[in-house]
Image 1 (cartoon, rainbow, N blue to C red):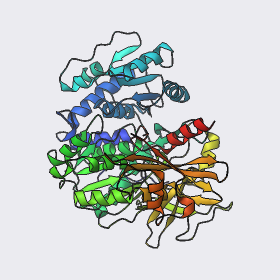
Image 2: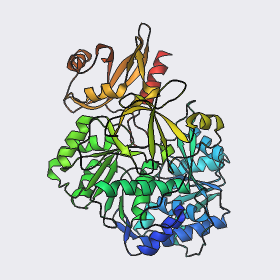
Image 3: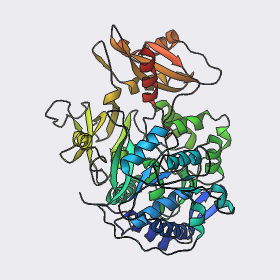
Image 4: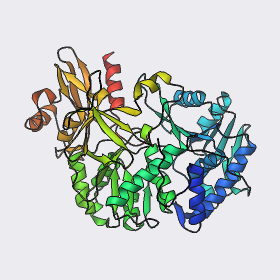
Length: 535
């Protein structure tokens, strides 16, 4: 598959992409973090120093290094240092249980973990050292970026990441090709065991170019002048490719925040002049629920994208009214480096539409029969995608790789259809489909209808076993403050919006709905909890 390059970029690997940007934009601000302004030159110096230190610890081309970090300047420094050496990054998440951490490290063979001095990061890293899961744990502190001394580390097997950043060194770049592995990014497995998508340098560089080409065509984008909200976790592919790598390639600034806070985000737009905001639906819902949102000036936003999970139409409409422009909707997967489709910023998006294939991507709708022939326009089938951003398989998972990747395309497990304009519409995940009394019930369609109820803040629908119907729909709902709702009221409200077979059979009221490490609502957690109760 031919690699794509972003406009103005020449490098075919991620380390080269960063080096080009550091040379071209040395004096520009790359990151604003907790009051500290860090230029491309500042980060480039730190990258060189850390790469040299990692090389002294034996990290070389092809070796794996695990990043177990929140959003902090240490993340881009370590990521690009690993890219300089040709090493392979393995992202761990703060929500990983101890067993998941051990599995990912053992599966990839990563013997170095870089982490944070806050809890639970440091204690978990110490436990991994104590169990000989890793040989070296690097500890960094956010206080270092505010001028504090490097964090002190005395324990055996630990080293100060801050001290590495501070020690001037030189480190030549390894010879890295577009086909070399850059990242092992874990995603859910069909057996319940996470599987690591093998992402090459060419995949990441192409994904950036594809995003840029689509955005340039519709957004009024001003290369080199944009300020990106950095509230998505960088350990997630959506933020890594769509925010950090795009901003770096174009010499733009990331307003990096250690977590998403609605008030802080609104302030970053109002007084901080944020112009690009890639987020997930739960973030936009939280912004709209902020009582004083009307007090903030959101006019600096020129491009606002919701991805990572389906966006309820009611939320999209309210947000578009608040920011004064249509919200862009995107779709992608870990296996596509987060890049797949984007809607146009100059047209109103239909409910459940996820936009058009990005330049360089080919999206097909396949029928569910054994032949997997292309489905007709308007007919629901499985979404398949191919392109230079699509990975070739899963680490140590030949069977799952063969199942998911066929004839040069990824079988996504998402169900959808294409309309006459060529826009893709997402119906649901194949694995989330509820079959009730022989009828197909699509959770997302039920959720869209539930979101229209004025008492509902957030909703998830999942299937639960039922002796009579096989499965029934269960609505899990978080209510707006001061609101009340029971099952009879909800079913009555939905009666003219859904078929009888689609109406929820049960209603669960939650103070908070479960989320993934990336902040997306997690239907799987609800389904698993329900199954345990039934067992």
